[in-house]
Length: 256
Image (tube, rainbow, N blue to C red; front, side, top):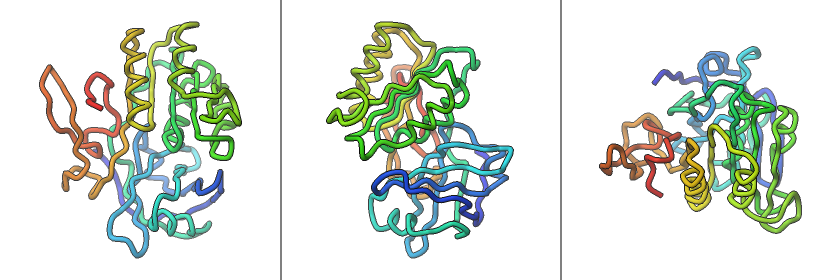
């Protein structure tokens, strides 16, 4: 695992939705090697533990990455209070990213809530050959739908209450999509219940599937063993670690 640590400048800050922020960070050495699905471990002043945040987008030409995060506690609230030109301490890129096939293949990228951001960089690879199925609680929580649109992806937007896009869950939209056309691969990130439903559909249609898991982490590099998750390989169960062995796993290896 090749990564670097340093203090990097926030060059752009946006408030995408209530309690949801988008930072563009100048970090050329990280942008140079970062892959879709990897994450950044962010140190926040006043807090001992870093926060793992998925990398939303990589701009190698301009030497920047985007991270999109939701305020879920005092740490992420303090991070959200940072403004443009603030330096933040980051270790990145960490973890194993998604396997990207030839860009001519048909891909379905699926995100639920704050699981949507890592799907942007994947969709960027496939562009018009990507179908982005993104789900949120309601219209006021919708983020990044315009990013997928601008990439040329076919966007299927779902909200639990029907206030924007189609009413219902991403699993329902995926079932509809697969009844119409198959795909070469499915990528997903979001709550475990959502991932479980997606994996069942991928198995039903015999489509390769990779999922990104979200767990609390300590070190982020496999030393503290906090982020253990149960997996199976060659018929045997074992504990993997989301930071070092993931966050992306083959769907056939995860036990949810």
